[in-house]
Image (cartoon, rainbow, N blue to C red; front, top):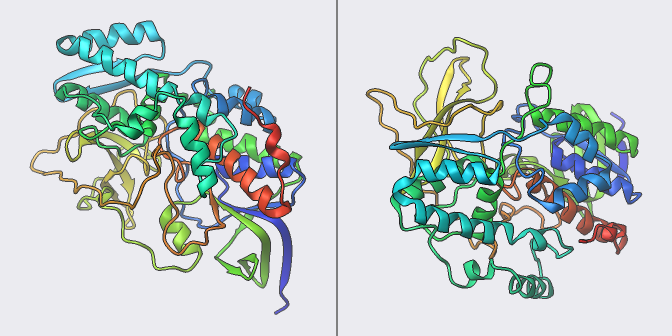
Length: 440
């Protein structure tokens, strides 16, 4: 069989929003870019849409790609509040600061002063990262010079207090439940009983500003699918090759080039590779032994719970506390037998779409739900924003999206796309035209 090889400067594996943003940025820098999916069974993006107006980097990257107006047109005009029920109280996180203060004051009347202090710290530490994350600093830092530059910048923001002297989120039990549920909404697995991380504070900061839905939930209920459609159109306008029918079956680093097999003797080659994949699919892409699932994402016994209504990929049932006050989402997801499995999932892996009107604790008569603590994942960067690549993955691979920086909504996509595009362009041509994306 004759082999057909197509050469690119960059290949992006994963037709999700972050991957498409990266492709659009690189195409604007006049690189040849191809976009392709890996696994046909890969679920859609299901993290909540956060951070449209609470992260400066979001608008700057979307403006650069020519997507800002399209994104605003496809999302709801205003964010919606997040309703949460703890075992002993209910509350709403209103996007409006004054309304949010009133609601939390009523819901936590027994801890009003402590809640005020907590929200001030979240605003200081979470909001204080805006200048750092929207700058041109290399994130995550990969060498001594880059780490020194980030450390110097950290000294200028309030997050330094969290890095140098870790402080607990709060000593109040009810507030730890609030933090656990809010982190679960954001898609973070930080421990509310442990120290506050800058990344966790940033995630809660975004949740406090509300969740965005699709502008037309009847025609397009999934807001991420709407955003991906807009990004696909923009990629095509920039000359990106977006493969919609075929998928790659394997990838390998052959000398200085990445080679992807597409089947029937077709191959793609490139100098750089960007992926928008989780750990397990990324390891499978390179033919590596897949690490066992993190203990924070465990499936309960499969029951024949046939749904009475059409189910999306994950339908919300509520959340359960994990170790300490940590929150985990409980969902119904289709099993391989065609019925429905109850799953307790790490927040970063499954969040429902459309967003539920209320997130409540889950209880099932006669069934005990237990979640094992997550095993350590190795050394975390000081900010806790970025997850490292799985073992044995070539260091030249750039990962983008919620798998690279979980819990930050749109900021996860735009921040990682911006950083990956700059690194890839320097790798390909030795310098970056994307340095025009500078902080104001």
